[in-house]
Image (cartoon, rainbow, N blue to C red; front, side):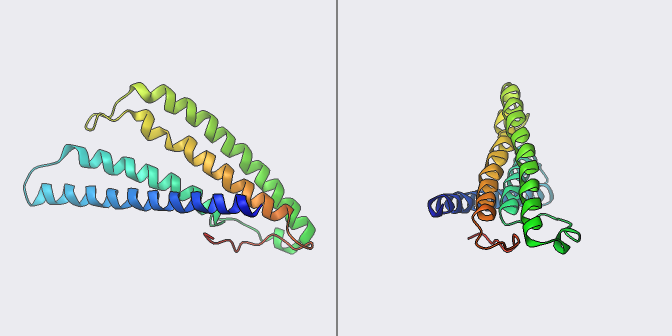
Length: 169
């Protein structure tokens, strides 16, 4: 299990770097569009499109990273009042439901990316399938992170309740 955690951490670190890079590129494109429009009185056709694509990519990769750190909103008012054993069982049940969602995201994401590979973006002529490919990639990443969480719960010492204290480590 420690080997799996090391591999997942390296993947998460790489995804974080890619997400940050996409976000910076999105900011650069937005800034370039503003400067070209208001300073040079001309509009760059490609900046809006690239900024949109970078937003989509950084958002979906960020959602996967947020899932890994257990940062998504959750309502656990009732669950926290249950025994530690019940909390673990509910956490596993939620992860199974998450796995179903991420599997659908992965499967249909591959189909959508494949079907739209022939369509090109108007300004950049990038195949839209490449942009949509981030959906199955994000689903796969979430499945990898889900396995890590599941292993943490299953191999947790004593009968302690699952914690929400995961960081990016």
